[in-house]
Image (cartoon, rainbow, N blue to C red; front, top):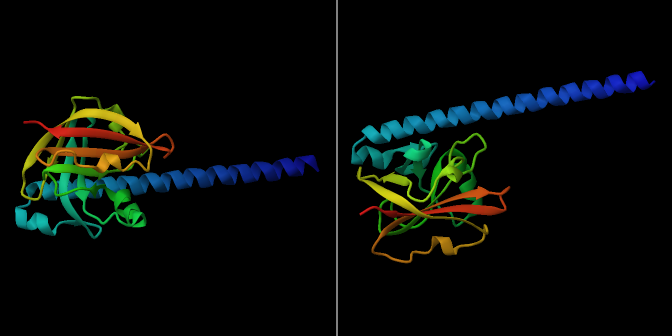
Length: 195
């Protein structure tokens, strides 16, 4: 009787392991496909003129710029979306970096960008490796690239909206936001235009 129970437990264990491996493989394939789409959009954006850039989308979401962080080999399209409904942010954030709050890319004031902290290092998964002084580059729809230098890095509560405030409308600033600590905190990186 014990042998039969052990065989059943062993079979359930084997089936569970196969299912987990299958789910991991599917998730990795989806991530690879998403990374490929992002790279294609970045390439099209880089070679397109201003008119073509105005029409560029990723899965139906308008591309409004490109973010590049050389120190961690990051380059993604920035998607425009309405974040007044947090449920609507889930899909575009799964795809790329989103404009979370603020004006236009490279506009004056504080532009807040959000991205997932993926375990495999994609999206904002490597931002924890950045340090004060590292460079963030934003390219807008007019093909203007502005360099920003990180001047502050900290963690905060997910409900802290003070990070979105514009303290000085005469400077260009970007705030990068991602989850950390099991989604219990937000990692915030603030950068100002290099003048």
